[in-house]
Amino acid sequence: MQTTFPTVTVLDIPFVKTTADELLKVLKQRIVDQQNTFVVTANPEIAMYAHDHPDYRDLIHTADFITPDGVGILDGAKILKQPLPERITGFDTLEALLNWASDNHRSAYFVGAKPVVIAQLKRVLDVQFPGLVIAGMHDGYFEDDAEIIADIADKQPDMVFAALGFPKQERFINAHRHTTKGLWMGVGGSFDVLAGAVVRAPEFWQKHHLEWLYRTVKEPKRLKRIAVIPHYLHLVRRQAKQSR
Ligand code: UDP
Image (cartoon, rainbow, N blue to C red; front, side, top):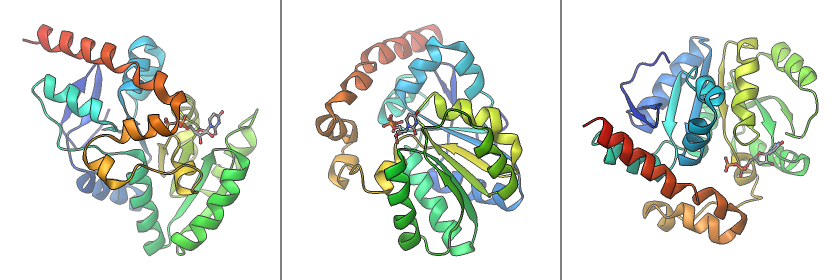
């Protein structure tokens, strides 16, 4: 991973040790400089999946920046006595980049989510980010990506956001990132949130590091996601002992 930041390795994943603001500055500069960039925002679930799937771990190691998305990663870094300053979520990074793009007439391409969500997303983007150039949009339920990639290569957007869930979105980005000179980032369920199909936790829950609880209560099928946390913390503690 080539990065301008120091990193903290939690379960074999090197997370950037920086703030959201500092990272954003670097991402914007790389876009202006037309430097190809792959951003992964990883939570404990992704860390565990990478732990169990070495091919996925190797793939995300090729990212230019891996950010701590989720309090579990901050907790892990604390256990290792190498604290990270703050969460850098996919959603917040996406929103910040879209605001910047809107102010600077930069372009973005959106791949992912259900067709109805992507149609609603277009309406929301037009209102919320009027200066943004929407290079293209495609839902995330396609058989063959050749046509989408040909379109992305043709449009050469400054940014490509893939909301396909992991590991699909990172595999998609890894396979195609070199078709543009811009930024590529996997953003999970962010299109659903932006489009208003899913409501993000109110600030109180976010501030108290309880966003996961709020989302689980709203969507009980997420329970199996947080079920990985105890095993994850066990593995991090083992890593801490080994490094002592
Ligand atoms: N998705 C998609 N294609 C697929 C599977 C999922 O576009 O083949 C979308 C799905 O509609 C949702 C997002 O990927 O918008 C994944 O959201 P999820 O809540 O699973 O991800 P998280 O935010 O937890 O990473």
